[in-house]
Length: 359
Image: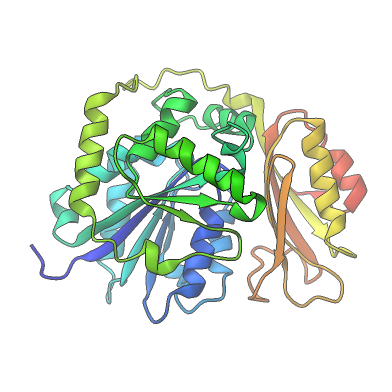
């Protein structure tokens, strides 16, 4: 076994829990290390990787970001994850650290077990598994801020070969974690935080540290350098023995794939961010929209406006990298990707903000 194995961190959690925000903040805080990312993106739309690349940090290397858009990572370990890991480990020089962001529906255990593959374990070390928990949702006794969106994500993944109930999947993600990251704590009162932590403690069979985060803070020292490979393997093995997840090796599920669509909009420069925030919120409230992500132009601003939405919850900020906007139609046009049910009223959004549907 190599004397130096590259540490790898697995970050899991439901759709909308805050995984991408956490990773973007970690990239900005890394000092001197070269990171590689494996992103198990939902939908073949190329936006999650762009969000990581746009952070403007020296650690962001476009050649070291690999997107896995073929479905839930735990169902495509041999076909997608292992070759991607080998490709990163074979780089010269290799990265100093690897981060793997799973799909929100991924069972962490098969991915953890993949680190014991001989060609991987001799060169990479599983530093730890981090599960991001939506604190604001759990405060209202929900495991995700938009359960309908999570269910639509399940139906829109034709490669998904497990039908684990949502609550059981949540417990699996908790039990696999070396660290729990409680996100969106800036939205919670002190009493809510204590109640949420008490709920998590009751769900856990083993002691697991809980780290609070918000959109502005990611405690890198608490998340990197864990050295908890042996514990991660033990937790994964224990969970696999305790649960049966009804995998279907023949992939004969009816996922209702034809009921969903991805729409790409070319959007002219906005007068102000509120234009797009209000329009997306209205589309979500009408029903049918699952996710929206994009890079848009705003008059008077050199940097692109980054927009991310899950349901009616819309986040936006100006990129630190003025060249981050991917696939621009023109210098004053941006791109917005919307995923949702067939029949959602995208035309109403286009009429409100201008632009056109390109896909």
